[in-house]
Image (cartoon, rainbow over all chains, first blue to last red; front, side):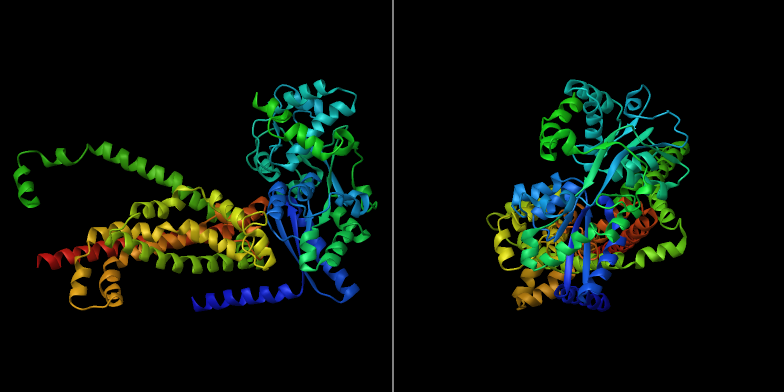
Length: 326
Length: 296
């Protein structure tokens, strides 16, 4: 017991010492751990070469909305890296932690990388799924995480809606299609990772809707030979925005470091690391040849803005509630 | 008394029929009980260890010696090391007050002690966020004074104390009430000081109940997920406890590592069960000894 106590005290001491050195906390969503495991050491090295300063980057991962909530409630994250701008907007709307125009502070609307929503089917594509229309054929079971709680699920939903409207269909048609689609969803997991487990481990459903980078992770983890990715003719592009949290960096005195950290996402090296993790780089063409060409639309293009989409479709009593609860 | 009754019935009624069912019923019941145990207890237990070791000992050892895992274990130990002694002191004090004295608001105090049992752990966590969070009652003040409570170690310790609050007191209250206060009164009459009475009369009397309460408190403190998850902030290597670390590894498809850390928690549960059985056995022994002393 004394040993445990001593080592416990030691860690507390050490962690308080390392607080004196430059330290950043990055609050991110669930599936970026592998990316930041590569990215953080690269940035640390770059920063050391440039300034001689040693920095420590701590990571916090969780469901994206939960992470945003934690930052609002006082999780002292210097930077927040999400998969929807709406999860960063709330920091401005609910707590005034960042200015409302945060997206204009970095290149490409503060979006260094993105990933389209694609389909993952079982080997050989036994149900012959090629495009969105095939998802609503009789006998096809679809796995999508809950759009109320999961960013991944929101993108799948908006992808289906936008597929109809971007091809000239009106809102009534889109609503019919999405209603039909969710009739084919038997399990609504709360998050993207839960949906993957349902599809891959419990072998439920014929097709999983998820991000392209997640598809590659699944193939790595569960075996290349078990699944195939299917690229629909038109799909939604999930943009991964980043922002520094002004209130936190000003208090901790880490503004310069936080900004450099985020800017590094847009550098050639940062973009190459993103490409390595199958996140499509947005400001350089690093690794582009490896990516399949795909026609995409952004949420902004199809729905005006994330806040509008959120309000119309996912708020309490919104369209998703109306079609799914019925 | 029992002896004579037994003798009376013996011979009049066939004992076999009176006390036991036909062999096939007995076997069926036994088989059912074992099947149930096997299905709901042993199978998951075996699954944890087989999943943990599926990729071999090297992966297992790597998973439990990895730096994030080690710091999760340390944090779990720190939380338990603070929560258990505090709740031990509180539990004894509360049980003492409730069992030995009459006062107004006693039943209210008992209800309050039970509160953490009644409240969902997630709500417990949210309470602390509401009080100490940035948007909470003391948020601004804490920020101004640079004190971190939620999303830091203090918040995790607070949440752990909250959920483990009732165990010691709940264990001691019925025991102390059953024992009454005659022995304490005797000690006082014979001139013992308050402390002396506590050390030499009260605590020895409730020793086994106390240890039992501490074991339960410790098990819950180390295993708590819900409340801690809300206040943790999930910062790797800093505010992740073991149960949180298991969830994160699982969500990262790192099943072998997730089950490796889970197997440590399972081992803790097994040790707890063994200790608990030992304590119960000791308690019944000492109760039997006491009875013998009385009859002699």
